[in-house]
Length: 267
Ligand SMILES: NC(=O)c1ccc[n+]([C@@H]2O[C@H](COP(=O)([O-])OP(=O)(O)OC[C@H]3O[C@@H](n4cnc5c(N)ncnc54)[C@H](OP(=O)(O)O)[C@@H]3O)[C@@H](O)[C@H]2O)c1
Image (cartoon, rainbow, N blue to C red):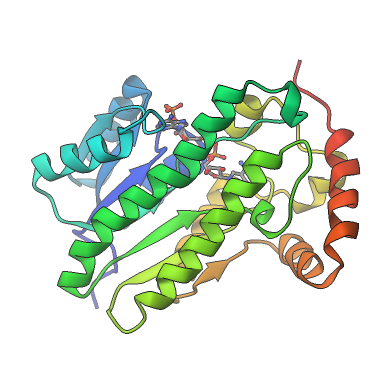
């Protein structure tokens, strides 16, 4: 039986580093053709050339800022110009910021909402239509364990990821029976460029929950293939999400607030 990804076009946002780069590497091994996008064109071209040579696949690079107004619509347009049917979308690009909301740059908080929520929504709307017409394919939305509870000192970030999980579950149910699958991948702490961009380190209490990008993506792809609607990689992370569902919200918020306040900023 042919592999789910073999010979299919997969669009990966945020493919220049971290989890997105891992998706590109692991799907290339499975002979998917890749459209990789992020702002860092040089990194994307180097990655695409490496994967093309190593796995005899086709690749396309689209370097653009998905967080600027109209960025997602531009990406949809540029993908359509290429003329490849996108069978799977890995909607992964995103960032967070650490620290008190009122001490933060307000414009950057807005940029985060636009990238993490608006762009992901616009891309899903565009590419899911064609998938439903074909009756196959699907979307992985990269959410977070932060989707499960508010996170003081990363308040906007956790709120964007709560949106991603809710949105993903909602449209996944709407598309039941269409042959198109939607999954929210909810990683816990993964050492990537995320921490540097957010200006925070992984807190002491979170260290037991760390998984590598390679493991997170490998397990995420397996869960997508099993048609899971939501997947939290790692037993410690899963335990945390169960606790967040069961415990009183006020208690969880205070606990997370204490943990986040104590986080070491990256100098
Ligand atoms: N690492 C973690 O602990 C963790 C945990 C849970 C969830 N996540 C989620 O995982 C996803 C991937 O993050 P990561 O951990 O792999 O971090 P990362 O290494 O910083 O990767 C983020 C990716 O998003 C791209 N990106 C950022 N801003 C962009 C913009 N305005 N336009 C287009 N692309 C943009 C970056 O590329 P350019 O800079 O080249 O644009 C990069 O490829 C994010 O949605 C994040 O919220 C991460």
